[in-house]
Image 1 (spheres, helix red, strand yellow):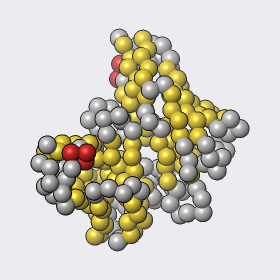
Image 2: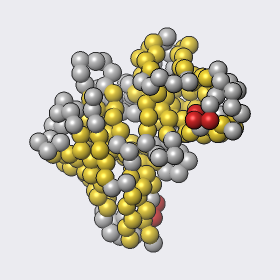
Image 3: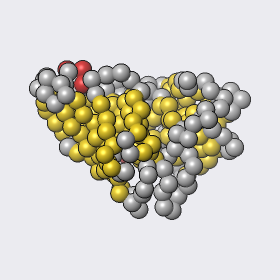
Length: 118
Length: 115
């Protein structure tokens, strides 16, 4: 079966410091990978998605960047955090899965990383 | 692009009552409509989904209905229990000749079930 891991679970960082959130998926190959942010208003904002190694699409211009150095690894980064970067960050994947339907964009989310910028 | 509207934003029901959450979408090309449940401090989890060739789908106490003509779909939870309390998101999948069908989410509904 497929599993998704995301870390760290919580992070408190000062303004201007760098950020690195990591996400890995197990049990599948060539997944579509996503980073979402959930602010206090609870809506899910798509930040980045990737259909393959080195292929990153950005949905919203911002202070963040994403990279996909390996097939099942997705990293969210920032060189200098802003107060407005605080939020709950969710990694997700979609694609071929064992024992279930494929073809639709069924998303499986990680447990999330709560970032507080002070 | 697609626009998904979700109502209500908050919903409180008594245990045992039914709860209904409604969503509308704008793009008639959308063909896949999932519902996610997010418990406090966790990532959303898929609870039920429906494709555009089906009008209704049921899984125990939860059901989803789809009206393609009106472009709206609803989540129905019967015999609610306190553990149903969570934020629920609807979404619509939007294809426009891309291999990546992006999901557009509603803003969420905070459901509270009182014992």
